[in-house]
Image (cartoon, rainbow, N blue to C red; front, top):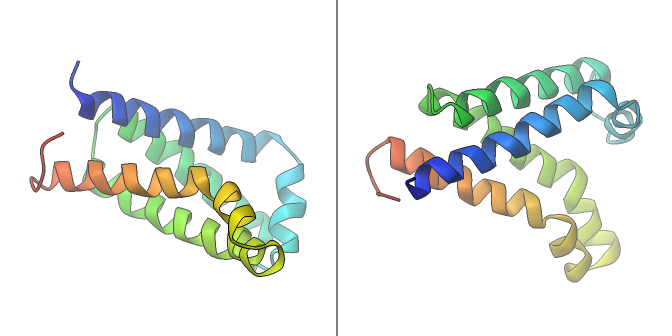
Length: 122
């Protein structure tokens, strides 16, 4: 099986599980509210649905050129709203540890997007 397929499965797995957890775990409501986001419950629901839907599309290798940009936006938002405060409050090492999955997912999303756009071959 090509590397590209495995990467799509890995991305899909992470976002499908993440979206499902945001829908069923009440702890995320408090987390979104504490970040100062506007309409935290609506934002949480939107993020969860986008993660779930786009994760399914990427795992199925369908409409990747449309599924990747919203997930990139979510990942940048996650880094900005939930990980950047760690950098300022706890230091670089704590930030790097907290942001490790976000950074890996950003890189994988960019690789898959470049592959679909025909710029690189995985």
